[in-house]
Structures are given as structure tokens and as C-alpha cells.
Amino acid sequence: MTDAEKAEIDGMSYEDMMRRNRFAPAGDPLFVGECGDYFLKVMSKKREEVGPTAHTAASKRIGWDG
Image (cartoon, rainbow, N blue to C red; front, side, top):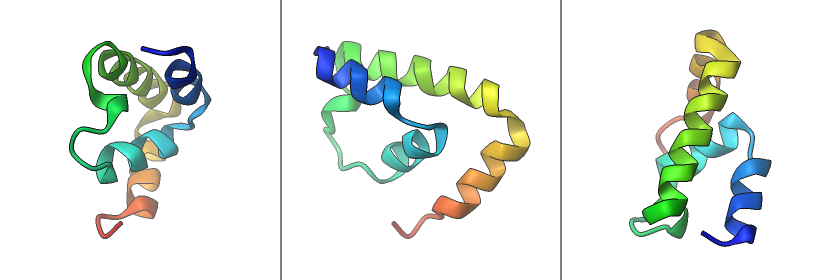
């Protein structure tokens, strides 16, 4: 994982992470190897921090139609 990838992940809001996770094309480098493991760890922590109500609201704002 590069410093730039780590900085990008760290700078994302939970909603940004959800959007990227939902709509990124297969093979997106943020979801591969060490970087993917780190993305998942940070996203899980941020989900816990925002709580279920904010998670649901963000999910509804993002939708499924990209």
C-alpha cells in the first residue's frame, strides 16, 4: 500500500467509502491486498462510529443506481 492510497482512505468519510465500495469497478486498487485489508478495517471502524441510523441514511442517499 502506498502512502497516497493510505491518505486517500484515511481522508474518506464513511459515506464516501460506502459509495466507492458499492460502485468501484472490479479490480479497483483500493480493494486489493494490503490496501484492501486496510480499507475494510477503516470502513468497519467508521461504520461503528457513525452508528446504525447514519449508516442507513447514507446507504439510502447513495442508492444502487450509481
